[in-house]
Image (cartoon, rainbow, N blue to C red; front, side, top):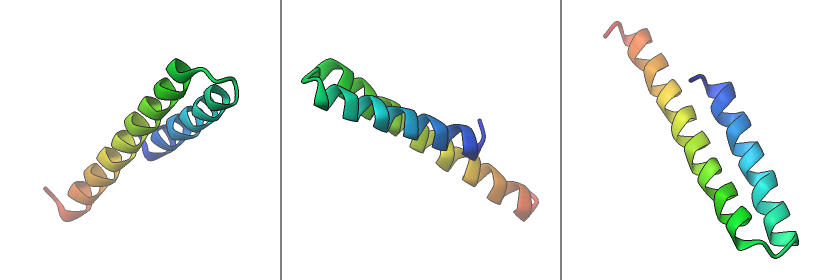
Length: 57
């Protein structure tokens, strides 16, 4: 997955977390935090892949 998709997943997760907090829905809040972490991992993975590609490995 690309950096943009990872960033989008992070934003979606942040919205879900905020909505869950506003609605006092701990399950939705936790799900949003999980999506943010998944998105961050996707973004970092894409960045690492780009670095590897640039270094010729």
